[in-house]
Amino acid sequence: MITIIVPYYNAISLLPVCLKSLSLQTEKNLEMIMVNDGSNDNGEELCRQYLKKDSRFVCLSQAHSGVSAARNLGMKYAKGDWIIFVDADDLLNPYIAQIIEENGKDAYELILWDSEIFTESPVNKFSQINVPLGTISEREIEIISGLQLLERVCSAPNTALNQQLNLYSSWGKAYRAAFLREKGCTFPHKIAIGEDLLFNLLVYGANPKTAYISRVLSYYWKNPNSVTHSYNPDILRINDRFHSQLIRILESLNLRNRYQKYIDYSVVNGMLADFEFYIFNPSSKMSMREQRNQFLMLVKNSPYADLMQGKSISEWFSPKKKIAIFLAKHRCCFLLKLLYAFYFMRK
Image (cartoon, rainbow, N blue to C red; front, top):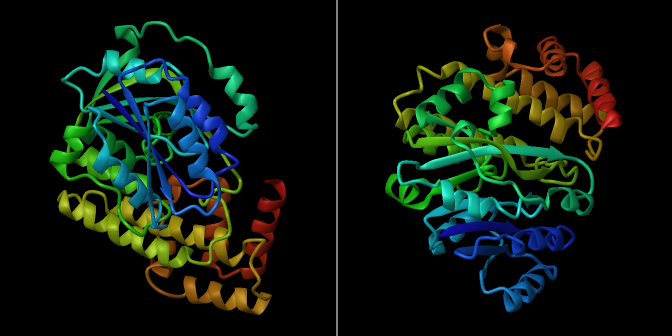
């Protein structure tokens, strides 16, 4: 049996296409758990309408506690041998559950596949993906260890291969439920950004035998209004929690020293997120003076001031981020503000 878990929060504009994508799954031995994370729109009512027509749907709800808690609730009630996580702005090929059922041999504990990121309307995209896939040949399946995946994430972040395998996100994967329970893998609470990566580091560190299927089976909509792309005045606190959890996980695996460079990289990346989603975000209500004060408070203090002096992690950043780090290092607040204004204008 396959379990698909879909957390949602005030996603009424996205749910119709997502629910239709799920309802067209060809696999009958399937449950689709819709977890309402305290929405105040009509999303749950829509999900229950699908439940009346398709008994494979399961509807759960909780007080608004965040996506991690919603996924954990779905995992608690999951009956399937395999768990697939989907967000309300994701689409699945209608044959994906059937493919996992057919290829999820007992030897595998994690299955990865290719995903496509799209920016067009999900309604338009849906008509393009509703096509048969045919049989998956043995040549399309590569066997990888979880520790190899961990090495790829922490030793060479942002490579094309890592992006292709979606190693940072929970979408594009099927996790064996018994393995997650045995290893105690759950999503971290109260972390709204990067929770997928922390969860996957726990999974990869437990070294699951992994199968990679070189087929595009799921589709991720790069929604400009998503929590990972919008103004967020709490980003500083969220990043602090993320880095603490990252260190804790790597220490629990006795890998902190081995991957200290990756920890440093994530801290600097967090600083850049503070610039993008808070200090220099177009939706910020701060005056230029307030922006400068926030900026200086950040870049003058540890750990950011120390890490920007080093060059060991610079190879992992894009040209835009390298420019931002250079300007931050030299405390060029106004030029940095212009850089992000240009960036948001192009978006």
